[in-house]
Image (cartoon, rainbow, N blue to C red):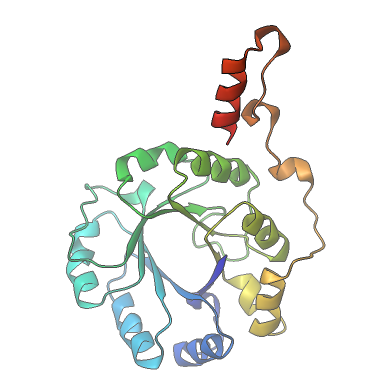
Length: 239
């Protein structure tokens, strides 16, 4: 699983200092939040002048079309639009390169991805957007499973409340990328935080019941309805 560093979560240092630190620690992606602010592309130009790390851009806006020309002029590797804020159809032109994603808040069903099946990934917001240091909402574990079952060829990105223990669970659930902000920058060092986000053994306050597959999602056939056909169908649906 890739770690995408939320660059604006560091409130103490300049953008140049933050990017230099992240480059030196070999972070995978640079997560750039855009709350309907076109000037974010000035920062993207600065980032491009400093390094070649992939940029993971998350745009919250009612009018996505006003960003298309800027995305053509300043290509990024990943661009995501927030579903709940959209007030116009999301028709990203083919001239906008990079992988495309749709972001959803915790209350929003992953079924909305049916509208965006041509996109490459979903970004599941596991805390309130813009709320630094929020706690991961465990309901999103079931959303990840549901999305993985519905769209096995699509990638899953997660943002919000990702610490060492959540990262460990997400990796085992097959999540492609997770965004880390306050956890990454509030640690003793970025290197220490990255090590914790990727290590194999962690202490955890979560229980197995928080993220295990519940019985209603498990491949089960009741004995009274057991046939070879029903058993094979259950195996296929349960993957």
